[in-house]
Length: 208
Image (cartoon, rainbow, N blue to C red; front, side, top):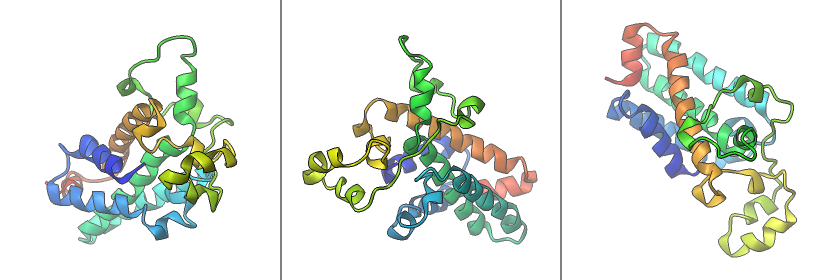
């Protein structure tokens, strides 16, 4: 997702739970995943190129950093790890066909409103049909140049990130479902982390 949407997801999901300083560090770490170094050679940061196992492992690696960091007093390290894992978790819904598969269950019927999306449907998460966008460089990069997009897109396979992504509202109404799923998943990730912490460590993590 674009930076503004990652930020809004975090604020909506955690704004009432995290203090301003803690949330600020989480947001910065989350957005840093999309810098140039994070975009090239790091499919696991974004669930790109069907790197599902790698991305899930990356989330777990960052989750495992948090408690030891809090125990040793490195609170900002814990905040940053949480920011990184939330970015990856949020990108799952924007970079895979999970939302498309979820909506397909309502074929011929009006689907529920976006806030009703289930972000953790076990059947879909285990589906052999689950896939994420493939990055076809250099055409992929050229597709983000507004003046070139309409000429480049027809040259890129339909399984590409350029065609599949739900990174912004420009991609159509499915974006709203991806956004709401990411909000719910972010809250879920916080609950997963907090379940491993003492009340005092949870307070330190939230910065309140």
